[in-house]
Length: 394
Image 1 (tube, rainbow, N blue to C red):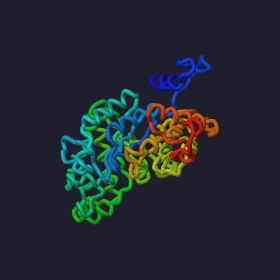
Image 2: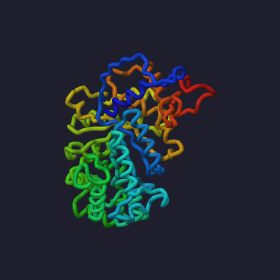
Image 3: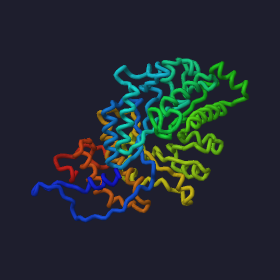
Image 4: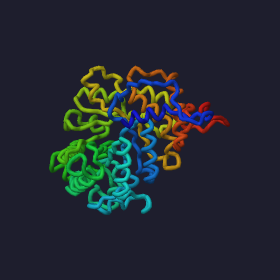
């Protein structure tokens, strides 16, 4: 219903001669539905903090393009702005006391998103990308501060903390906790296990259990999955987890592709569900990737079996935050994200970029009218206006 109302709203324009709102060429008969159920934008608030009002405006803009999932990458190595009430020192690694999210802040974001028909999937990356956890709780890290990533798999303290935080985030079943979404993203990417083998107590634990470092990596992932599944949630992991462990993963695992588009075909062939975000195309922080590349990135590429196609949940464009904060997030997301939004919504056969360009240009102007500072479409979709002129000719 919300998506239909958005379509209706975009058909309306104001006629300045008659001073009336009109729908040109009416009546219209529109049959429309999204091809994929998971159409998302990842927002990284760990590399640069995004204030709550900014996140709410991101949600507004997502609804205009019919995205339905905000993937909130809230914590990473550089900072931890998340409030945990069971582990109150968790956010000691925030950049400042003004750059933190209270649980009330997060509930505000989730409820605002819900009113727009948008799910919020929280991510706590681990065991890598978790150095910020060590600031408040050094006991969960290998040898903080000289070697503090990845998290220490040899101590129960790590898994007690994860279980507690998952309980705060998602309760004991979907629909509970701060984030009622069934999916919880647990990262799992870029795990450098040398800290484990070089920390004596972990090396001793590896030897006692006859584990290689890769065995310990699998042990960590399995423990976290059991925690999530026991609470009724479905774990999502980045691609490396599948690349390392393949069919050993729990059947509930959802694999998020970022390294190689071709891995998605392998994931669904193995019977797992997948989400596409291949970094060569759908990473918004790659500023030289133009809108046509976003538009032509086909999730079903190399996947022809209908039963395997059903396992492709959809995709996300990723707004990693190393060089993005509230000052430039909107003109980095828009309008290129809209090209991916159409790919995730429209039939596979809709691929004509000449036809898509006018739609994208008009959508950029619509965003501007609604207060979203989207950049001109241009070549890369983030260039400044080339000179004086109206929105519809730039």
